[in-house]
Amino acid sequence: MKADFNVIDAFRILDLKNLGCITHTDFVLGLKQNLGFSDFSNDDIYLFFRRVDHQNLGHVTFDQYGDLILPFSEEYA
Image 1 (cartoon, rainbow, N blue to C red):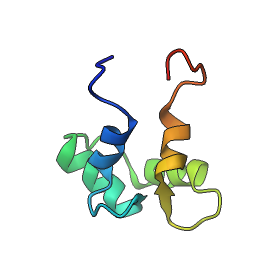
Image 2: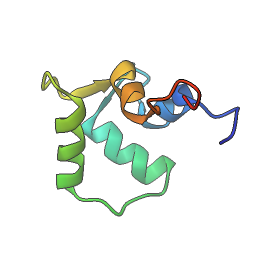
Image 3: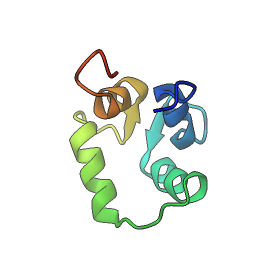
């Protein structure tokens, strides 16, 4: 709900190497180190990537991430 926090900022929290994509390791470390969240299992991470990484490349791009977290309604996105 803060105007100064956007999808790019949310992506950068998880894109630890600044490569423009998030790997399994980046995702886990980003959640633990940057957000202080550790209440998840390896199965949770696997299911996240299975849902988002349709081509099984082992990473999630910014566009894929944005499609995942943005609301469907343009008014709220």
